[in-house]
Image 1 (cartoon, rainbow, N blue to C red):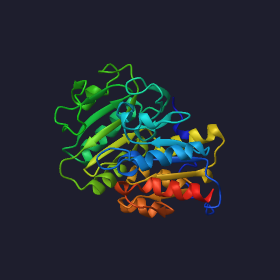
Image 2 (cartoon, rainbow, N blue to C red):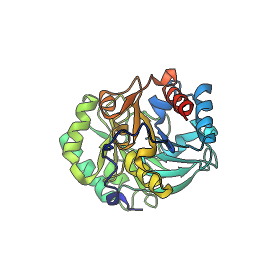
Image 3 (cartoon, one colour):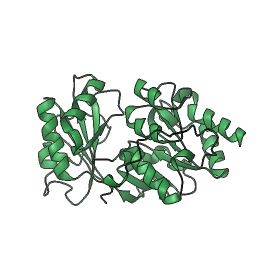
Image 4 (cartoon, rainbow, N blue to C red):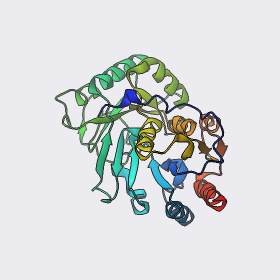
Length: 294
């Protein structure tokens, strides 16, 4: 499903403060935001999410995680049961539970664009190694480090993995992961965006020099905008939470947004507000206050 070019408003800053507009949807990142550092969801946060849903406010998990890593929150799905995964590359119905999720929407990275991105980044940052994330499969180069605690389905150079007749050719590519062992993470992100240009969207959510490369225009913000448009929800009625650069567009787009106390400086600059750190239940703190005002 190629919808990337249609969403042009997902990076705009709200023209007026939206604090007085009743929220209809909460969009929250997971790692470093909703989840504590031990990857748990605290009882306080579970209660806050349930209270929001009971008050008629939809909750969307919006994450860079692939669908198969969503078991950490699958027990806390309410109502619609949808999550935005892969930095906007997929909308997934989690109602089936771990291993039984259904892809509702896929915004793939065309293999031609993926190959161009790999080639451009190989030239700009020698020593970069790659992995390929697909709807169900995960593939990597032999030198790609064990960052994800899983066994890849295939080991081969990225050019072979992304070939039209390569492994997993029947599945859409959701994103490429690009890792460099020595470049500063923020410098690597800037370098890669300049090198790749409009061939793909580049962001990061890891503290290491690990980049996530998606289709042009694909981001948490643009896919969230699509989901909200389908529900008749405006950006002013959305409250968003995040902590890393892959959250910046979403926080800028939402009517109200909160950077976590542990957030990256770019996230703090993008958000309209700030809450306490993920280990202190920063998302729950804001939701509780929001519901008290209602």
